[in-house]
Image (cartoon, rainbow, N blue to C red; front, side, top):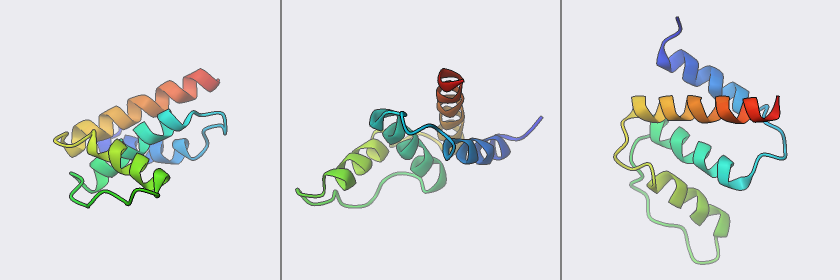
Amino acid sequence: MATTEEQFKKAAEDALKLPPTTTDADKLILYGLYKQATVGNNETSRPGMLDFKGKAKWDAWKKCEGKSADDAMKDYIAKVEQLMEATA
């Protein structure tokens, strides 16, 4: 059986193949989990008032604060699998 890290890398590749109908909310969840798994807690300052996309991504990452890299990877894998099944 593959390690969590190997499964995470595969899920990241699969995420690139998600259909364009994937909602922005789901994409933001994936973004936040990916950043938490690969970088850790969000220690950056929040983007400016007119950077709507940047603020949404920052907020999504901030929601994952305190989650371990391993847990973030597992949640990311589960979310990608759920989205792939929904489009199958």
